[in-house]
Image: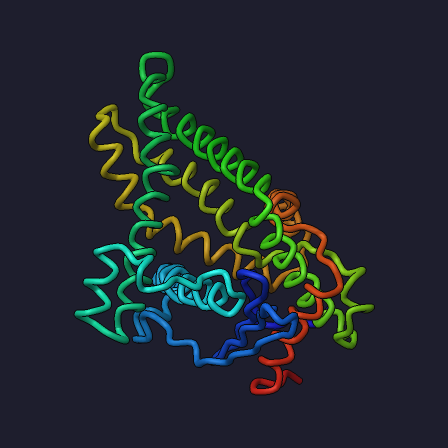
Length: 304
């Protein structure tokens, strides 16, 4: 198997493939054709410090959130699902547009990312602490972190199962499957055609879903050593340690993506199982879109 650094992201009616320096966005437009756009990957935290283990994971996580949100919003525009007239804008949106002009979109992106981070923190880190507090008189202090971890994973699985039932999200998950199949086909050194991509597996070790599961599992280990019976201190430490957990998770999945050992296979297995929820079998048109995105990157960054 050939290994590639190219990764991707499913978007509205399309796929983004990212190389080392550029990304290619391929989206099905309302006319049925495929619109392709290429951009340099901006990057957050380009200093030497952000090349160090853990820190590079934090930078990559924030980078993916900001740029990923920008790409997702752009895909909705191309697909014709975000055609908002001036009359439909809220008062706040009109104010931002009037004051910032072309920079307004960047402001909306950062607001969206900030709200996503806050909601994610509340749902997956603070809610488990609150629920786990009901068990503080039933289990020793050292076990509270484990209880929180189990609750965190349960909330995460329920969340994924819930959104997977939504029709619009199901289509995104199909494009997610097309993205994985295309990368797996390329790593198998087969020609990128719909016929070759279709039978490939829709699961991949470097998937963001696996990263999120690693975050959940590693948080159990980290919080096991951060023991306190103070509810307030548990809330504070959970928030402060999120960057450390994200950085550690990035290092694990980065290592897993480069190894074929039995240990890596065992560690990666739960994440691959979870991808059966976050990916779906794509149709030929969706695979074609993913192939166009992949070829868009390879045109500018050919791999030997």
